[in-house]
Length: 295
Image (cartoon, rainbow, N blue to C red):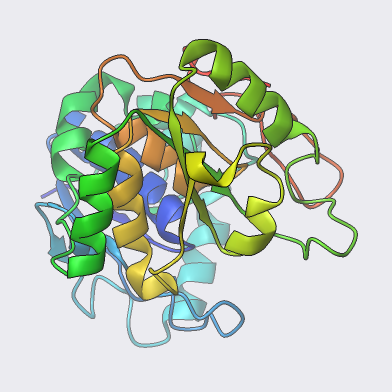
């Protein structure tokens, strides 16, 4: 039996990319998809992230201890990874992403036996040809609490634009990894020409700082600040998908909020900058769908 075992890691947006690329490879090659929900988190001491895809409609099982290469997982993974570097990419049994740009070689892989997939694979080109399957798998189970239900009702009752602002660096410091200071100003100006009567729902890890970057009166803005921490990230993502239009951050979280939204006439504004030599790497080949507006 052919198996594809993706290593899921990172924040929620990146976990979704890990899954989607693996799902496509398994789907087109008639392989079983088995989720590694352990190795990407067990030593995440810095960010302390955890597996969050149980909030979606994912139709596959979790990996067994043997499939996780236990015992001595780290050593056995390292050996597999290094050995497979000697093998042509399309024939490897351990495929680790090389670089960040879209790599068409992943679409050409013809697996034999068990294949381990290790990478973020941040492009819809890795799964565009099975888009409807991915959308069905990634339907979010709506949160059932009153605060989120009330916020969703507000979103549905207006022409809602989701604005996501991610602070990788503190606003008061040297913000080399945040979106440029004028990006949100330019994005609001552009969105106002498209939907001039919209109401803006602002999602951010630092909502008060985000509010200061939005040049609109208070009556046209709602700060969505009640879903705290990674545990509730899925709820914010669900609320985003209820909006009609989007101004996203340089963040895979709001990338998925915009992509999963079902409103047929949606407009998505995204930062199109790229910085290869610093920490930030955004706008690389394949990341942003062609129909999105890049500023």
